[in-house]
Length: 77
Image (cartoon, rainbow, N blue to C red; front, side):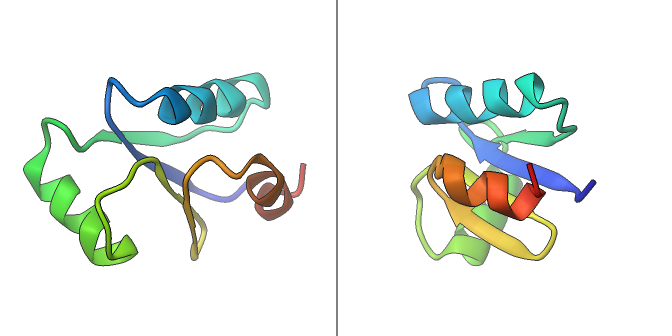
């Protein structure tokens, strides 16, 4: 299983949907709250070039937003 990271905020509906999807599919992930963690917010902006969340990193691939089809493909599920 590939390492999954998600940059999210507590008020983001699509962030919650992505995290629920990972839990349903038993995909372990690391969640970074960019609303409170300034260094992770900066890291997310450097990786994605923007402020929108969620930003999901699967292996070496970057997904901006909750694109369920692409995420499933990258995870092989």
